[in-house]
Length: 113
Length: 116
Image (cartoon, rainbow over all chains, first blue to last red; front, side, top):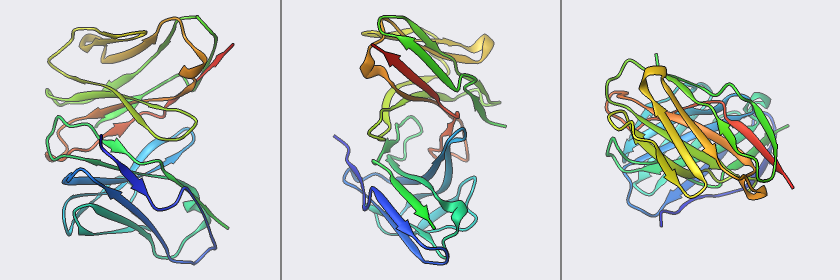
């Protein structure tokens, strides 16, 4: 079974702090994704990576950056957290095949005070 | 433009009722894939089904069935004889040809509450 893990289930940070969200997958998947989930908006793609050190902006990249130094790990960085970044963050991974399914981690609920 | 619309925000049913969750999509691609995911209270999205645009056959898996109709751009999901464990948020998603990468566009989700 594919396993996608995220470093924290719950996180509370203060405005202006730098925040790191970590995601690890164990299936040697090429593609990894970061989404945020907000009520009434579904899941919106922040960034994705199709290979090590490669990244592409998603639909809402502003205020975020990412890092992928190793194939299994994809980090989401909030350089200076703001209250409007309070949300549920979901990581997913998939092979590079167009037909493939994305597999999701359990999510990190981030609260920025 | 690629878009997925789930018009039903919340549905409440009593156990054993049948329930249909609607999904309407927009795409100009001729090849695309449609997905349904379930998000139970635990929060983990669970993959339910994937359908490609060339296969319009309906699919049944136990109490779950899916009706794909290209003519109406819909991919509806029916749960027969609903159970309390079906309570969750359900997302419909579309994968088109976004530069060849495996990207999904999600609908806003439908929250299903099944009461005993």
